[in-house]
Amino acid sequence: MLFGMICCSWILSAVILSQFDYFDSIVSINIEVSLERGFWISAMFFGRCASLWLYLAAFLFQLPLKNPGDSFAYTMIDTDYMFEALAQAALAEAAGEVPVGAVVVKDGQIIGRGYNAPISLHDPSAHAEMQALRAAAQYLGNYRLVGCELFVTLEPCVMCAGAIMHARIRRLVYGASDFKTGVCGSLLDLFAEQRLNHHTEVAGGVLAEACGATLSRFFSLRREQKKINENKHIHQNSAA
Picture 1 (tube, rainbow, N blue to C red):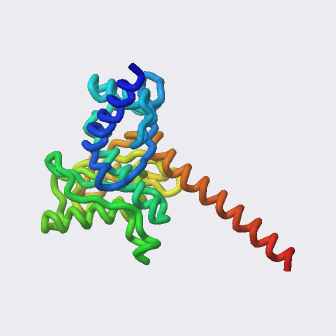
Picture 2 (cartoon, rainbow, N blue to C red):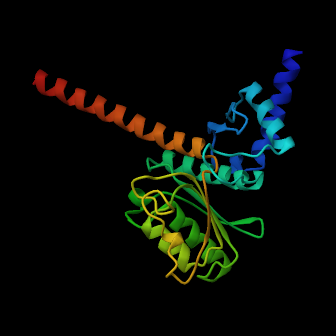
Picture 3 (cartoon, helix red, strand yellow):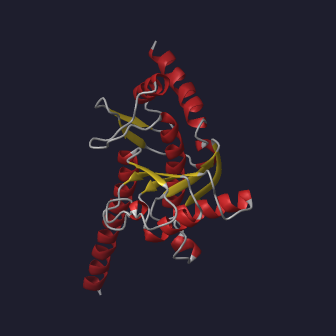
């Protein structure tokens, strides 16, 4: 019985995760989602069987995902695309970049993907949103991305917000809030500025826990590594 459940979980994991193109992008990603009903789901590519059964239930019954304090409920379709953005964030982390990912969607199809790469590309503008916007513009052959939606794991900064407006993105969906540089309401709200001639619809907090946990884990590991390097340097100096 147990063996059968495990086998079914592996099959279900393959079916579910294949919907988000994980096989093409990452080997392992840990996603934790807080559902409105108050329980946590953690899904890994290589299996946490009970979690996959819970996720399947959420997937089949279309449970609304929502963060405490948010005034809107968003759809499972939004979370599907945010999972794709999280997969891009994992690629950034694997490259040693701050794990932020983004995708551009038009008529239900992903036409642009991008992840944070300013360090590796020696380009201060190479944020995830900018990368995804560039890819989408190349795909359409047009710098105007009319009717497109942008999904990004972290609240955009001033630079990315400006590019989003210039591209005429119809709708922006972000995951975690950024209280240091976010301009969708955290630091300031550029998208609510009535004097601007384009107003993108904004929805925040989609899979915020998963997006925030990805960033927290990255910076925690970076601090630990910095401490290890400092201690190693002290020991080397004392030995000398």
